[in-house]
Length: 223
Image 1 (cartoon, rainbow, N blue to C red):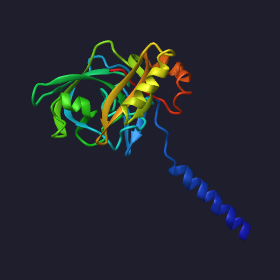
Image 2 (image 1 turned 60 degrees about the horizontal axis):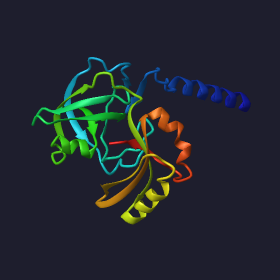
Image 3 (image 1 turned 135 degrees about the vertical axis):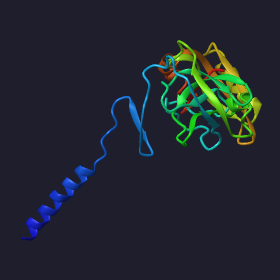
């Protein structure tokens, strides 16, 4: 009797768990906070008006949806459905300012917002201080996914001399070596970047060239 009861309980538990299992999202879709989003196959003809916001230090350095590290001082943005890699024109409808950015992340998932920007893009649109603005987002024709300029970041130093020393030691190995200054968390950092690639695939294929320099190199946009 005890064994039969235990077996029945196990079978009932399996049936319950199977019935409650979450169905995996369909190809080309993803779920966030219980809502399913379908990624557009193409950006052609897309145009959207809504609220833009920007995201900063809490996300700086974290991995974005396309595998890059988020750089709040870069020229990227997050969008829920446009293909990753799409370059878009963003116009602030409140002051007429406009600029361009590349989509490398998903979001924002706050009701009513259509795009999340880096601090750099927010400043160019004159909305950094306010935090949000009404904007129009439109793709730039013919620019999607793999196109764009990329570089590997292999070091970041508070002391400029340390960055210059590393850059000098790498000058013979890479055609493009540079030191870029950026303020992070209230302090100025000197970032050492090497290589200049016209698409993300080529950059990833040559990641092995920089792994002996930095254990976790960052693939970032070459601005």
